[in-house]
Image (cartoon, rainbow, N blue to C red; front, side, top):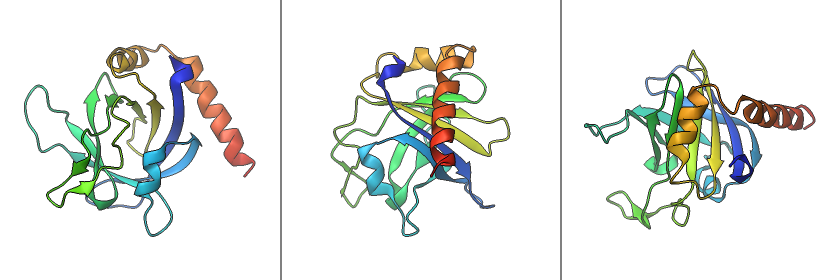
Length: 162
C-alpha cells in the first residue's frame, strides 16, 4: 500500500487570513496536476474552506487551489485525519476550465493535520480509490506510524540538504 504513495507534501499555514491559506513547504515525489496550481509567487497554495454542500455524504471541508479549482473534499476519519479524491470530469466551473486533475480520478489523498491546524501532511496514492477510507481509519487509530515517520524523515533530510 505505502509503495503506491508517490507524493508526500507538508503544507504550512501562511499568514492570518479569513480563509486559511496553506503553502506547500516540503515535498517528495511528483504529482502532475500540481504544475497547474503554481501561483504568481512560484508556490503552490491551497485554501481550506467549509464545504457548501450539506448532508451525510458531503465532506465538512474542502481544499481549493488556483483559479478556484476544488482539489478535494475532506472526509473525516478521526481526529485530524482526513481523506479525499481529486475532482472528476474534464472541465470545472461555469467557465468550463480544463480540470488539471483529469486522468487522475483513481488517485486518493490522505491528510494528517497537526493539532493546532498550523500545518498538514498530504499523501497521494496512485489508484487506491477503494481502500483509502480504511487506510485513513487505520492511521487515525495509530497504524502506519513507522511508514509515515520514514516519509517525514526522508523529506526533511532532502530539504536540509537543498
